Image (cartoon, rainbow, N blue to C red):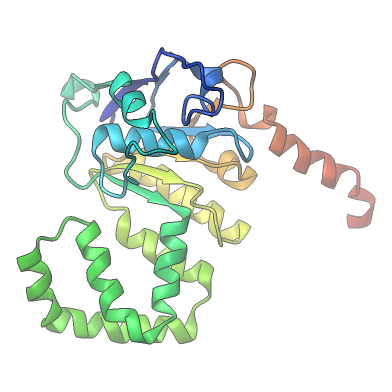
Length: 269
């Protein structure tokens, strides 16, 4: 399902070379990203992929967006957001939608790590559980009802059990399982954080399934070769001099892994 068809970045530049996010995204000023069911924004550290996802989440008013405001240190971001534009899908018969689903979500790697931290601290389990549901759109009345429900009591027992039994990676997989439900637009920033290669591939395969069979659309920032090689995705390369798409095998980070193991292949024989 295509909920978000395209996103156009601000065509404007500013004189201040340190003005955020103009400085981070200057290579792709005015560019238009056209999205598939799964689209990857690839780039190494500092490429702007996380900034791009957060700008999109702010423009689309998606749950989980980090608020950006004008202040003495950061004069331009609100102007930048207003200068961006986007197009939604239009024709439902062609696998598109003319509106964003209500359960659209922007999930950052630090969100997952924060959830894990809360799970590992029994004293804040209840607070964390309620906070998580507030991010998923629960009203104050619903949160108050949840606070005294048997559902929450049972979940606390499960979370305590998970704390003892499961690793960070396994807990991350459980969190993604709760967040990623059918009929959603999901912006995921480096979802591979804390996941083993096996779990990275498992998560990527689950994303493929949700996109193919359950009307989900994903825009993912990653440089993991395991995610890149498993996802059925269109890949934008932010490391290139101009905005371009590449096959996963052409990406610098993937080639680095290939060369690393190829140079040591005798050690495996």
